[in-house]
Image (cartoon, rainbow, N blue to C red):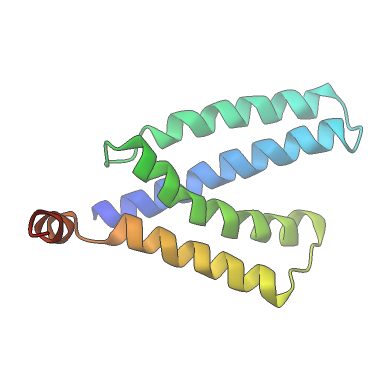
Length: 119
């Protein structure tokens, strides 16, 4: 149950962070106006709050693990919102990032503690 909650929070965080950055980009770079950019700033602020809802108390681990979701989510957002077509290296890179995220976020903490203490 805790893993499902973490994954859901990562997805929500990605929607706020990627969506917020995209709105700022649209407002500034695509000249859609400050309302778009302001909406992006609000979404980015909400992203920061969503990250605090993760059950793990280690900020660095949570944000590092989230990085994999951010990379893959950014590519997905580009496909849906901008018609971006990733090449195979984009896809391979995103899969590597997701694998790294899975190692950090889904590995057993007790298993790591035993391994660390026995070294």
